[in-house]
Image 1: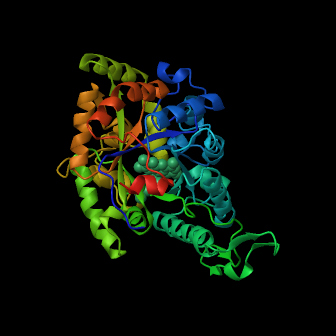
Image 2: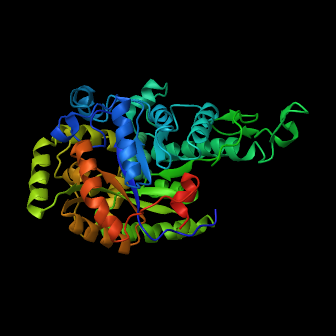
Length: 438
Ligand SMILES: Cc1cc2nc3c(=O)[nH]c(=O)nc-3n(C[C@H](O)[C@H](O)[C@H](O)COP(=O)(O)O)c2cc1C
């Protein structure tokens, strides 16, 4: 769509439909402990609080299996609830549709758990029920147990994962945007014509992995296609993003790293006839805010005491596809070649400090990186630096539980809004309109 970008930053809460919430957050932290993720009242309260603070969206990470690469076992992930167990965020989005009016509901969904034909029906239904407020974070899944339990022999290599992602996305897009004309639904009671068959057409997709000869099963929804988010940042991931994404989740370590990512992406976008204005860059950040700097530091130190290195190793081993219990963590990343070195997390690190020799230990501790600690004013100063680097939004993670999110809303949001860093009203329309219109 033709876009005019908003001047303030977008804010998205990064979480997951799982006991601890976002990646890296301990479920047993006092701030998380009273949060019962399976209780819809709690989820509603959180979503409504975000909406009251004019957050753009709530975003759920999601996986289809358990992270079991570390020590070749699921034990750590099960014991410590490392993004596990997981509810289905699409169902949660449906449950929150009526409890919210403006908040974007952005779910991750990988391209191996469903067939694109059935998946397109589910997301179009959600787009109808939310009046066009859904976003889809298209993930290709690196998780071994997900691939095995869904009937594959092993995790596909990086290039094949993105190849599959592209075909899956193409099928969904064709079903949702090309199969039905805008005017197809006539609902003419006198003629007893619900929809005009002349204005509905088969997509006739016959690809390497999927065959979908027929027409879509849902009538056109407000957005047709949910807003497409992408989080991959390897070369393959960036190409996929440049071609498809409307918003990208980035994990730069500092504003320089974000600027390098943006420069790289601007070039890639132009190869697809797109401009930088058509892609929102949402930086992952965790925050600890308090009325004094000392208090914020104290809270941050307290959080460190709750973080589990075993949980971080379990998650990172799964992401990297390498059992980190067998690796000397102080070994430089450069010692490894192949598919593994292509991973976006390593690329993002290199871009943030070119001369540094990054090690596996840096990878494992990255989950808690980019932690902004301080008073609301200090937090605003920090966000300002990222805005100057060109970043469009913040993907906020509260490692200290849902209490941390409420704390952010109460203390930081008013200051961010006063400084023009955060919106104070919602734009009319769909999530796409809200994110892109000024
Ligand atoms: C902020 C963020 C959120 C992500 N969320 C998910 C997720 O919910 N599910 C998933 O399977 N992968 C998720 N990923 C992983 C990416 O989609 C991608 O598979 C991973 O970064 C490896 O690809 P890359 O090497 O191209 O970066 C996420 C990555 C980032 C940075």
